[in-house]
Length: 119
Length: 108
Image (cartoon, helix red, strand yellow):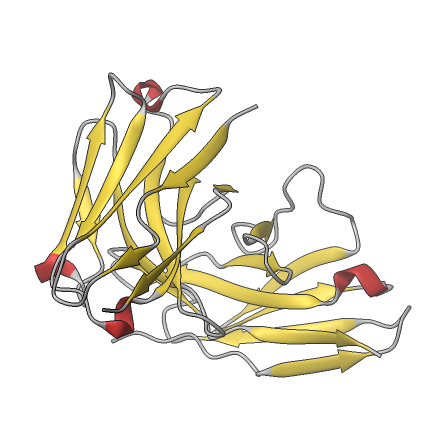
């Protein structure tokens, strides 16, 4: 079955760029059947949608993060990526990648990866 | 910015019915979705499009909608249902995704 796996550094220095990758296995991003999203959850807090990308490369970002955010897709490697610049401690969170049958919900999630912003 | 409001906590005894509400001005225009999250785990979709249940989700989970409020109902609550539950929807223009603050369901 389809699985999503997040990967990337677990520790990022303040003011630097947070970079994560979500590798999709068991299915093809290029099928066009789904949207691919990033969602985060600060420790002990609720969920925050970050943004999504379609296989064609079209994106939509959370307006609160838009100025610092880039989401990209590599269909040849069947993965999509997140870059968040100028991070602060407020960006410390578990970051999840997720699949959506449309733009507005998520039927499959990765296990998540904790990213801590600290010097 | 658009917000969805949930009660922070709900408590029920095993076998009883739990109801978790979620309020938002755009809910008459946008579908709601519900996720269950257990400690240390990723969220799991339990209800989509207000009241549809994904395959593999027990029949005791159901969803309903009335005006600006949607409700997740769990009938015959079991100990394994103890978790955080999040509602989710979109803003009125369908542009961006919003999550509620989450409700901790405690099974007494």
